[in-house]
Amino acid sequence: MKKNRFVWPYVAFFLLAVLSSGVIISCKEKNEDIVKRKTITEVILENERFSILKDLMIHARMNDDLRTGEVTFFAPDNAAFGRANIFSSSVITALPADSARKLINNHIVGKKRLSYKDLLVAKEKSLTGKELSLTKTDTIFSVNKADIILPDISAANGVIHIIDSLAVR
Image 1 (tube, rainbow, N blue to C red):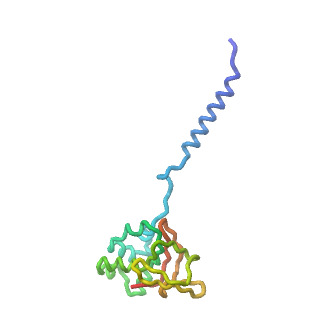
Image 2: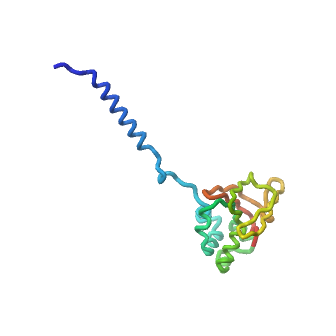
Image 3: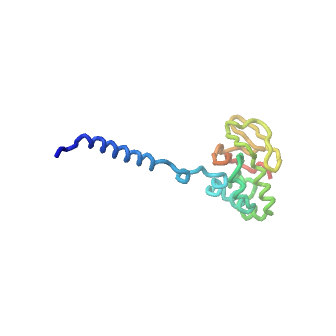
């Protein structure tokens, strides 16, 4: 009986090709495997620095409002609320929900993602139509005299700039 040694290299090549293609196909990323960036709402809800703003958002029922659309949010942190003599969320959640919503919307520029390098000395309109005056002293931008102390917190649907006081009440 004659042995056929000619077939084994082809079988080995075939097995190697099948195994390597299986590895390549199984490594393909699926949409559900990709980690998505956080929305503005998620950044605020998860950061202790925004605990008063978080409670205000929940009170105003704005959790879903800041998950979509491109916006620039000049967000006051807890220290900014403290400068306005608001040291706990109980003070601010005593406001009617519409007033709380208006306070938050006064700090948001809609339909624009303004990174710090894109800011200009200009006037922008907030979601409520209030005028936000952007000024610059040396290298620091201010929004209605509230300094931007931490710029460019990027989110999936916009950008957050933390300000040191309330820009509009």
